[in-house]
Image 1 (tube, rainbow, N blue to C red):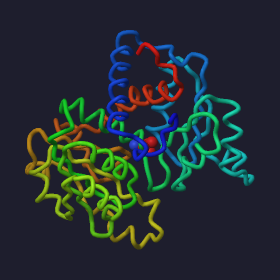
Image 2 (spheres, protein in one colour):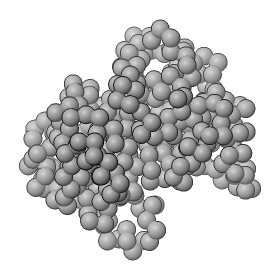
Image 3 (spheres, helix red, strand yellow):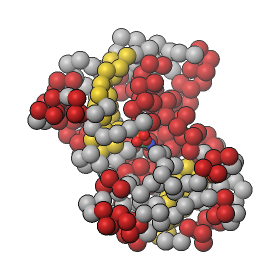
Image 4 (cartoon, rainbow, N blue to C red):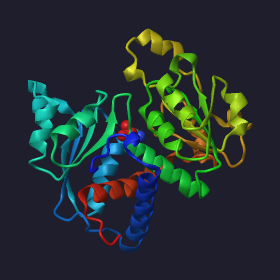
Length: 307
Ligand code: CP
């Protein structure tokens, strides 16, 4: 369909197609500086939760496609504050725009929005559930760094319970021939239904609390922030706060070719000293957000003939 709600709606062919289009757009953008595929089109960004990268890279992507942007980054300045429902907000905003990008704290919010909207809806994160556009830029970044995804050993570290980026990424990685290490505190393990699904799809999945023992095995270490805002109880957060930190001492045990990823924002789980090493790939992920989101906007708008 035209909506981008969950990686569960994507086939491997769909994913590869988006990554190919993103690569062609990146090349064309480098050659021409800016493009005009979305001239006259309007993107609406509806962000009910904070964001730096997702909102600004979608806005940048729309501008670089020649389109324009409306939206809000805090619902407190909108009529949501007066009690307007998400459905009515979406049915209103679609009169003003051609595609909606939505971030919302409620799991399933993007699916609900897509059901009421006539125009395409792109999920920019729904609670702890899914962040599919992040996953596409993560896969794009891995492919560009290694030339492939198949054959890699990948560790997902940190908050695997509440982290939506790792839920989406793990499900997409099940399409590839990878070995997966899930490294987290006991309290923050990946939800059982996802682990069972990954194993059911033939993926080799190891679960451990031991970062130092696992790091020598890895080609990619994908680090996540402990999602403090998702904990129902602050005391539970305090039990796992600061569980892991990737720093140069920890990296002494890693392969030279290990690449560290992080969807960002980070708090203290990657020491800034790692930024200067060859291991750091997280600002490359930030870069990938624009071509990948240009591809997604262009495809959902149906304006990319000739790319
Ligand atoms: N990676 C990511 O979603 O970042 P923001 O929360 O800043 O959008």
